Image 1 (cartoon, helix red, strand yellow):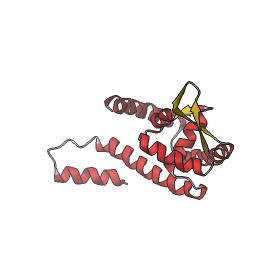
Image 2 (cartoon, helix red, strand yellow):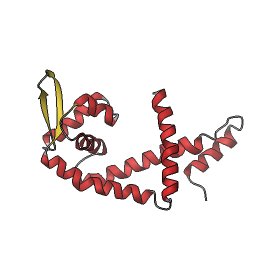
Image 3 (cartoon, helix red, strand yellow):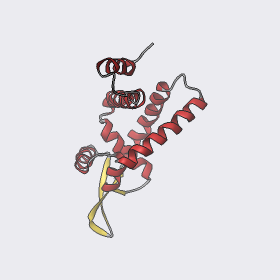
Image 4 (cartoon, rainbow, N blue to C red):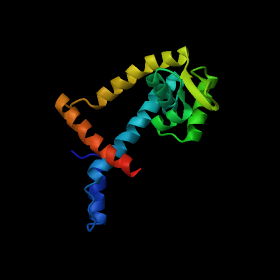
Length: 162
């Protein structure tokens, strides 16, 4: 039983038989899984009133355990600086985060979760993890560990080239 990527690979093998297209087996699936999970997360976060990007900002702040610089949020979420600012503005207006001036340098903006933002993360993040577990159904613990290790290698290669 083939998936979307199998069909794409077969199409390329027929259209361009001179090309080595085996990387589609992996990179195509990584891209497809990423797109589908991102879309699903966005759809399932909508009732909470946040986008996937806004939720990433909230989760980054929750993991930090205290105020962090906006540039650190940008680095952790892989959003652009402008996108971080835009998402932070929306979260600020809804009372989910607050901005603080850094005591050492007034030009630096710190961000932190408000209690309302923490409540949203506490409510939604377990649902997020449950969706992840559902998508990994059918894999044994050993297979999950193996897949995680292999994907880590690919991620390190991609990050090094970025």
